[in-house]
Image (cartoon, rainbow, N blue to C red; front, side, top):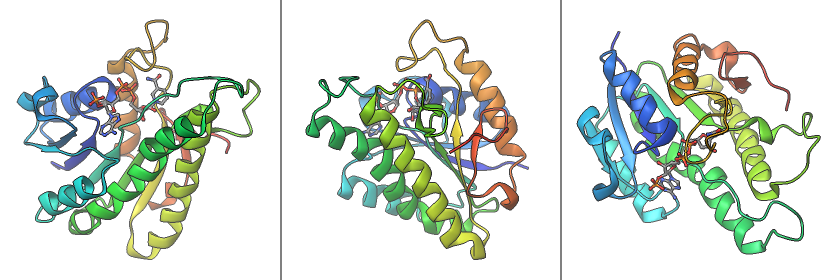
Length: 225
Ligand SMILES: NC(=O)c1ccc[n+]([C@@H]2O[C@H](COP(=O)([O-])OP(=O)(O)OC[C@H]3O[C@@H](n4cnc5c(N)ncnc54)[C@H](OP(=O)(O)O)[C@@H]3O)[C@@H](O)[C@H]2O)c1
């Protein structure tokens, strides 16, 4: 069955690879990019390109209006940033706020804006791209304060949404894509975007309400909070 995917950060990295793999198998991709002139290769793959800076309230509201008439099956909140200043000495209040705005607040606001389109869709699924660096249980290294904390907040928001909308059959998961060779992951990362997204698409295809509110690895295995 063909599905419609709404994907943020779709112009490069994992978002572009999601768009490529999903479009290649016949799914419909609505690609969210923050600058039309930087849409790059996704413009040729996507059924629609919508321009939105995900941290801009007016931009996200406009995104909601743009997709209001759509039946969106799956929203992938993929846009994200890493943080500068890895140590306590290096982190600043401004950096904490910048990273939280993109990695935590924006996925929540985009989800709210897309809710009517998600309710109209068949799968009613939201995948928040998180990171294993958000795991408190697995945090043995410290460092990357802003990034870890922002993705940890995203995980909490995922469980809040799962609980609030369980009765409506809306499913929310947080997913770690692996350590992947992208601009963010860097060249030393062991996985390619093709491998990571290949796994995630397979996992997403198999998700049901039973997994709502869970923190999953790319291969579908549960991760500790
Ligand atoms: N790569 C890894 O190893 C890894 C590991 C764990 C988790 N993740 C997560 O996976 C997701 C994708 O990462 P990636 O590796 O593909 O990163 P990437 O190559 O750096 O791409 C990030 C994407 O997010 C978009 N974006 C950033 N800030 C935005 C904003 N304010 N408004 C709209 N779009 C914005 C970027 O758009 P522009 O081109 O306009 O900047 C770009 O499309 C992120 O959430 C990341 O935290 C990645």
